[in-house]
Length: 136
View 1 (tube, rainbow, N blue to C red):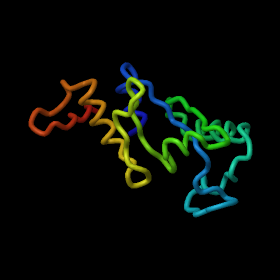
View 2 (view 1 turned 90 degrees about the horizontal axis):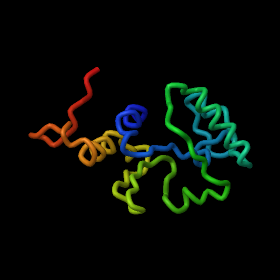
View 3 (view 1 turned 90 degrees about the vertical axis):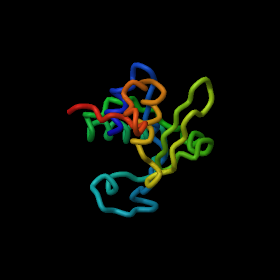
View 4 (view 1 turned 60 degrees about the vertical axis):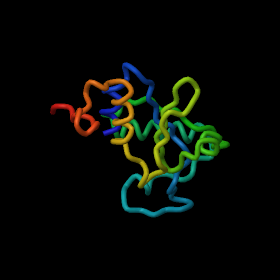
């Protein structure tokens, strides 16, 4: 879903994934349930964070969205309250869209609606104001 948004709107906006600290690392708040959760301890260096991002790219090769990596002081997360995941749109140095905090407030469809209204209004259903789904 997020990859589709990237493809559909990359002509108008720059989209990035910002890798933050591990939310459920094996050495801290491990909750299990999938093979990825077992893999990583909380990174102690930028090198370790870059290695995890490299692994994420290999795990999901279909994702072509570029990654940014929060610094070890976790400043991006502290300033933007981004953990565990969040969607933002900045335009002219101002927030134009701030999605809810994940996992339950992380709703890519809302971001798609915002971007469609802003950049592709001709694709809106005139009765509902919602995006017309792309043809498969």
